[in-house]
Length: 347
Image (cartoon, rainbow, N blue to C red):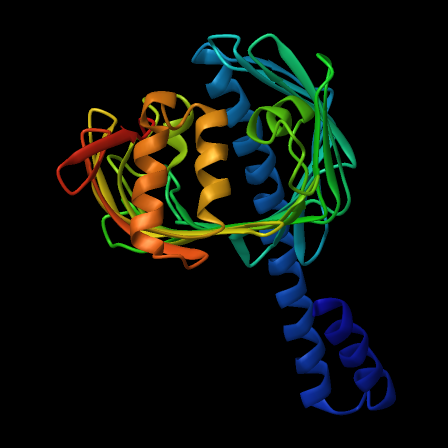
């Protein structure tokens, strides 16, 4: 804005130098420009200092931190911070992230609203595996509270075509993905969460386990997740170096999977005690017979319970292709009425 106002004020004074008002306008404009320039310079130094201090804080808490450079530019209206040669590893050594460049972009008058930009290629280390991520246009936007311990208010990650390639040989991909979260409670413990992917290709070993006869397409047409989450502590900067916030509540508005002629929708509410979920959910499945086979192949349904699941499906479907089944979850165990029929994984 100042880059536009200053030339206009200067031209006005040059064309009408005898007008006291025009001279006053130029003086005021130059003073504002000087003040803004000072603000940007102080802000730029503060942003760089905070970035370096955050990385040092990680290092002090056991993280391995390496980077080549950290610079903030964008005068006069932006704080654009660029990290190059970033290499992070958590204290356990189980997780690491390497990227040649990573950018955090913000408007200078809204520094708590940030856009993150990733390169086309980056690398994750999870356990003993190294995963190369190749993506098209991976970006995120986030808003945090203005605080010395900023907490997440909103976050959205969008990416076009994305592929994962493991050094152990497996690969996965998606044509598009969107992940979003927003704060939904005043205490900072509740969040709305949304996930949407299309043409998701699972690793071959996983697909073979789920579908050994390859009856289903190679890609999952759609996977959506829409829920309200509750955590035991806020998602703030202290969560990076302190205890990880634990999920204690899940209000699942809908989880929807479309994979060939198999369509599954799940809704319900669960709470967690020591990681063991309890609550009630409703499962609606088109192609329920195939769903039972997938559950058995994936280890979610014990082979000894397969006959019970098929009997239940046939009973509820009454010769229809779509079946809707209400289930009760008690400390991880799935109950259909009075009959235990399987287990849910811990939160």
